Amino acid sequence: MFVKALRVLAGQLVIFISFITRPRPMQRTPEAQAEVDRAAADLALYQFRGCPFCVKTRRTLRRLNLPVELRDAANNAEHRQTLATEGGKIQVPCLRIDEAGQTRWLYESSAINAYLEERFAA
Image 1 (cartoon, rainbow, N blue to C red):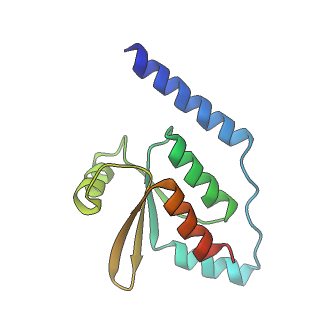
Image 2: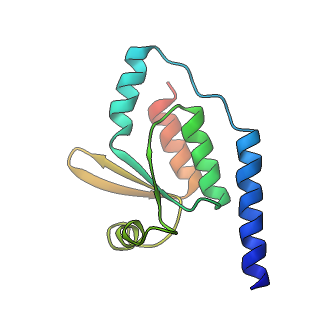
């Protein structure tokens, strides 16, 4: 019980620190942002709110100004089940990428951030 409370408290602290130090969103022309918005519509991030690796990925999403759907795999049974059955395991963060009629599941915050940087930072 004590460990769970400590984990919840630590998660809230991570969220608070991330909030007060959050990065400024990238500025693009309206046309460029509209194109990014269309491309980001094919992405979904499965995450836990207090997970520090998920916070790291959400900070990248904010910095790159990407409107990616966030799916809570901790409190939403449907999202958790989809992550397990389609993604193959319950591990967060996990980016679901729908491209050319195929779905890819990208795990690990560093790999996700590298993919987002490569695809959207330019």
